[in-house]
Image (cartoon, rainbow over all chains, first blue to last red; front, side):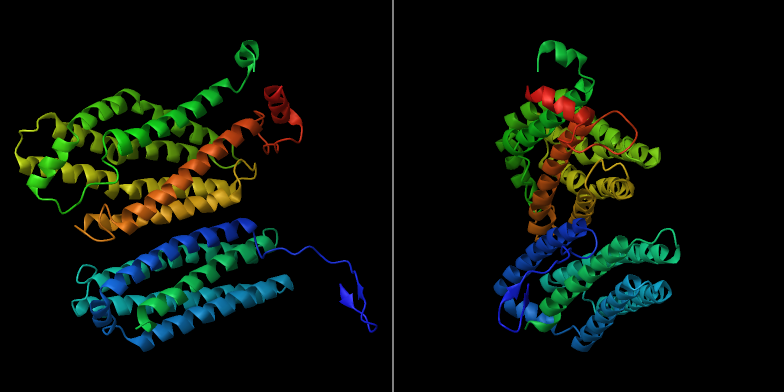
Amino acid sequence: MIATASGTRVATAREPRHVPGQPDMWFFVLFESLVFTSYFCVYLFNRARHETAFLQGQSHLILWLGVVDTIVLLTSSWAVACGVQHARAGRYQAARRDAILTAACGLVFLALKIVEWARLIHMGKTFTSSQFFQYYFFLTGIHCVHLLIGFIVLGVLVVQLSGEHRRSQVVVETCATYWHTVDFFWVLIFALLYVVR
Amino acid sequence: MTRRSWRSDPKRELWLAWYATVAFYSLYTVVFFVITRIQPPGKPWYSPVQVTEWFAGRHDGLLVGFALIFVLGGLSATALALITYSIRRMSVSRAFAYSYLILYAIAAVPGFLFICVAMTVGAMRPDRNPAVLRWLYDFGFLSFSGTMGVFLVGSLIWMTAILLDDNRVFPKWFGYLNLCNALTEVVVAPSWIFHGGVLAWNGTIAWWINVVVFGLYTGVFIFLLRQMILREDFGTGPLPDLGLGGPAGQVLAEAAS
C-alpha cells in the first residue's frame, strides 16, 4: 500500500517477503537459541545461589579482553553482511574478499580466546577449579565449537563465491546467517560472563 | 488395507522396519526409565554402600528389564537399517550410508550394551563387595553417557548427506537438527571429569537438556522416516511430495480407502 496526497491508500504489487537464506537455517538458529537459553538459565540460577563465589571468579577475567573479542566478532559479522550485499549486486570478487576478512576476524577471536584460556590455566583457574570457571570454560568452549564449524561454513561460502557455476545467493545468505548466529551467541555469553556483576 | 494388498505392497519391508523402530524406542524408554529405573542416572558421587543400596532397590527391575533388552534389543538394527536405507535413497555417495551403518553398529556396544551388561552383573549377586559394585556402577554410567562422541560423528554424517542430497529425502531443517543433536552430544564429554554438578553424567546440562534434545530428535526422525516411506517411489530421482499424485500418492489413496 502507498499513501496518496489525498490521504487514500492504493494497493501496489509487492514481492513476497523471504527470510535471508534457507528458512531451514532459521530453524537451526531458533532451536540452538533455545538450547543456549537453557544453558544461560542454568548458569543464572546457579549464579544467584552462589553470587559471591561467582563474583570472585569473574574478577579474574579481563573485561577489556572480552570487549576486544566482541569487537572482533562484530567486525566479522559486519564483513559477512557486506559480503552478502556484494554477492547480491553480483560483485563476487568483493564478496569473496569479505568472506576471507570474516574468517580472518574469526581466527583473531580464536587466538584471543586461546591466549585468555592459557592465562587463566596458568593462574590455576581451570575447568574444575570453581563453579564459575566450570561455566566459563563450558560456555566459551561450546561457543568455540560453533566457531570452528563456522570456519567450515565460511569455506563453503568462499567456494560458492569462487566458482561461476556454483554461485547460489541462497547458500551465501545461509552461510552468513550461521556466522551471525555464532556472533549473537558470543554477545550473550560476553554479557553474562564478563559484564553482569 | 486388505490382506491381499498388504502382501502385494512393495513397501511392506519398509513398514516392518519402521514399526520395529517404533517398538525398539518404546521398549528402550520403558526399560530404561520405568522397569530398571537407571534413567535418570544415579548420582556419580555415591559411596560404595550407597551404590549397594541403589542396586538392591532395583534388583528385580534390572534383571527383568535387561533380560528384555537382551532378547529384543536387536530390533535396534531395523532402525539403523532404515536410516541407512534413507541415506542410500539420497543422491549422495554410498560412502555416507556405509560410514553411518558401521559407526552406529560399533557405537551401540559402548553406548548401549555395556550399561546393560554392567548393571545386570551388579544386580546378579547383591552380596558382592561394595567396591566392585561401585566399579560396575561407574563403568555402566560412564560407558553410557561418556561415549556419546561416537554417536556425534554419526549425526554429522547424516547431516552432511541431507544437506548435499538433491532427492529431497529429508527437509534441510532436519539436517540442521542433526547438527543441534551432535552439538549437545559434545556437552556430555565433561562427564568423564566431574563427579557432581551440571556437567556430571546426571547433570542438568550433560543429561537433562541433552535428553530433551535427543527425545525431540528421535521423535522427529521416526516421523520423517514414516514420511519417507509414504513418499518412496522406488526410483532414483527426487522423492515425490505427498498428495501430488505419483506412486506415493496412489499408495496413500489406497491406504485411505
